[in-house]
Image (cartoon, rainbow, N blue to C red; front, side, top):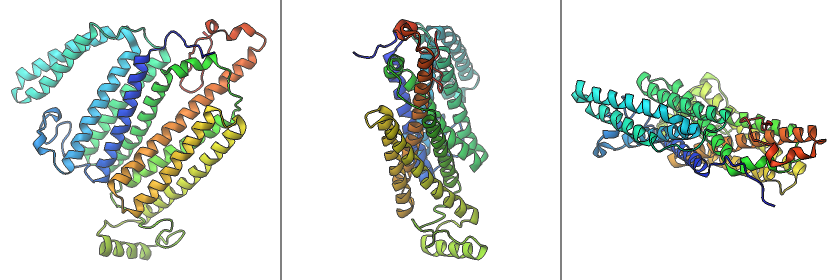
Amino acid sequence: MPALVTPTHNAGLHRFAVLTALATLALIGIGGLVTSHGAGMAVPDWPNTNGYNMFFFPISQWMGGIFYEHSHRLAASAVGMLTVVLTLWLYGRSARPLMRWTGAVLLLLGAGTAMALPRRWTDGSVLMLTGLALLGASRVWPRCEPSATWLKRLGLAAFFAVVLQGVLGGLRVVLLKDTLGIFHATLAQLFFVLVCAVALFTSRWWQSLPMRAPAPITHHLPTLYLFTTLLVLAQLTLGAAMRHQHAGLAIPDFPLAYGKLWPAMDADSVARYNQQRIEIVDANPITAFQIGLQMIHRLLAMTILATVAYAAWTTRRALGGKNYLSWLALAWLGAILTQVLLGAATIWSNKAADIATAHVLVGALSLALGAIMSIVSYRELMFAYRETDLSTAPDARTPSALKPLASGVTGLAQS
């Protein structure tokens, strides 16, 4: 018998959430290309692009590093727009008054800008077009009922996250701070996880999960998944710190490091490394700190590989090979193995842009997969606990008695 589905399922909303997640992944890839090509400062101003409103920047000037950086800004704007639409859709018809008022304000602000500052007519045009779009859309969309309160809050969190992400990217350009680039890259990964979670929560599969028998899961599996996911996040943050050090490859060989298991890091050795870098590959000088950072990155990669392999083995042993969590764990292990190989290939290819970018993308997918496994397994665990508590009430599992009010992590609550 097919699993029953709650009547609140919105297939269009789910598909749009998936589209937003895919667009976010593409944006992360474009951002990786910007960093890999050293084009982060190719456009020195923000929010304009070389003095132009970014949406009116001439195509004839999309050359060299400007192409990558400007494309990144346009893609980020597209993801921001998708996130706004997703948030409004989650609020359903209750979002219409806000859309009308915001549209009217933007329309008036744009008209005022165009009249008071004729040289800024492009900025005024963008504001007016955005206002008109909101006003027009508010008359016919969205028509659906609002989503659950916790899901609306997730959408609102995604909106504020994408705004913060844009501001961090702009400040990175204006203030010339590499540290902001690290936060910018890390927030991109977290935002991707958040949008993937919204896509999961709006899916037919998630909403039908309460109607199925819970998996025979114990508390140690969700804890293992969550711990490993946090390790992946730490690894991605380390990778972002390495990319924004602008020192190229601090260690040019793999699996050894300057021909040793652990390289010498005293002042004389570092000076010798730098002499070789200048004479052989014309690379920027590096420091002992950067060498140590890359060694920690390598050690953490091996730790994550071992932990994910253990998680896959433990899951299969506890739940059997046919359980969906076993398949997800196996896919997670495959992603981590691919990530390790891409990391090695990045070094062997002297940080080729396409390989380095693929390394970033697979890292994002690995983080999202771990987060999804953590969320789903915790929900299974909470549902199993509740089934134990309700074992004396056989009618409690009928569809009318259940309503999925799962928070993003813990799972179900009775209506």
